[in-house]
Image (tube, rainbow, N blue to C red; front, side, top):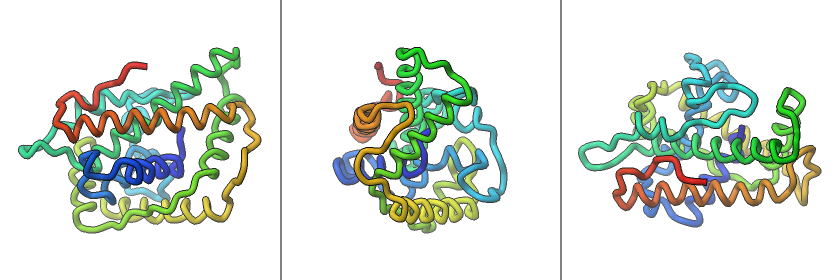
Length: 231
């Protein structure tokens, strides 16, 4: 799965290239937390969360070899606008996270199928190692400021409440990741084990464009903004 440095890099690019207003984002900190939200209760990224929720529930996918989350199902169930036509920034971020996971994993699965690479534990480890290397090539600096609005949006997250303690632990975990990315930054072209260099450049751009297309449609008032986009 894309790691939090990759998700954070996407948020930073969205804000830099498009701007929050063009995407319908009102609270950037809440949007960043939302981009991490599906992973908070899976049990790996946030130490000692107040609860654990199965991956198949948080990501709408069977946790098999390399799952492709059904972000369209998340949209249909949880992206209902309020009376003012707004969807919370945490929900927008969670949708973007699931969209990113879907695209990265779909492209990975298409690659191994096209090259006759058998799925299995060895392939999964090689894939994850390549993703980890790619994540450390990215320059990231954004860490969310947890204010009352972020806490309230997380508590009201319609899929499951995100407790304040876990929200603050999420910000602390991301701060450590940002620091580690700077300390162990990978310069130049990494020696990937399985995936080619252009896989990451192409897929990073594709994820960006797909998230942009959806959120710009949301900002323009399109009620079908989050439905799955064609390949």
